[in-house]
Picture (cartoon, rainbow, N blue to C red):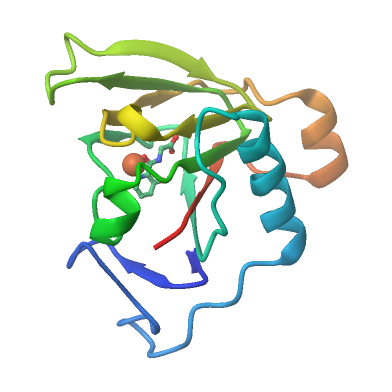
Length: 160
Ligand code: MD6
Ligand code: FE
């Protein structure tokens, strides 16, 4: 789901409403924004954003996301290299990134529950994706306290 503005993955564009039901995208909770902005401020090499988009994706244990660039934000946001901030919750993902769409050449890292990844400046247009989600790797306290289901939740914050 999208918060702030709606992202339509088919049209690869942002709009105020969701095409499937016409509803307005819910606003981003201030507590969410605060987490993203605090993380942003620790990466002092990147400009600070005021996020107006938060895309929330749920991956099942068979979920994946092919290598892509995030370049549907405004021209000015992209040329300034305004960062996007990604927060992972639940099962660990193998995340890949690189200069091309070739996954054999991509660098792979684990994104565990609680990890924050920031792509900004020169890295803003890196190709990136999720090769797979690792079953049963979420912290046990998280499962016990929240009843989170198997899989991974990823939140990405951006400024259009
Ligand atoms: C991730 N997510 O799940 C990376 N890109 O770690 C993305 O790259 C992404 O979640 C575009 C739109 C939504 C996303
Ligand atoms: Fe992306």
